[in-house]
Image (cartoon, rainbow, N blue to C red; front, side):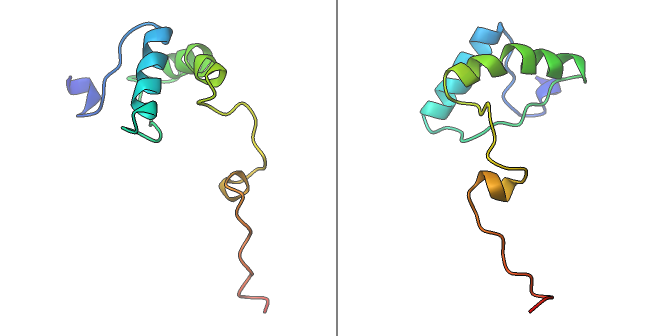
Length: 85
């Protein structure tokens, strides 16, 4: 529990972890997650290799992006540059 620092601590198979994340998301309990593995890069790499593909299959994690910036991904126009006019 101390390792989670007050956050949800998920331990289990990739399928169990994906199921829990999906349940929270579909219930409206969360609209996204910050992944905080106890060490890098090993467990983060494991998460990306094992859990992310399951979430992608379920349509819960993007496989492709529409642009190179967050603004592009959200479909937002770039604001006018106040310095040029």
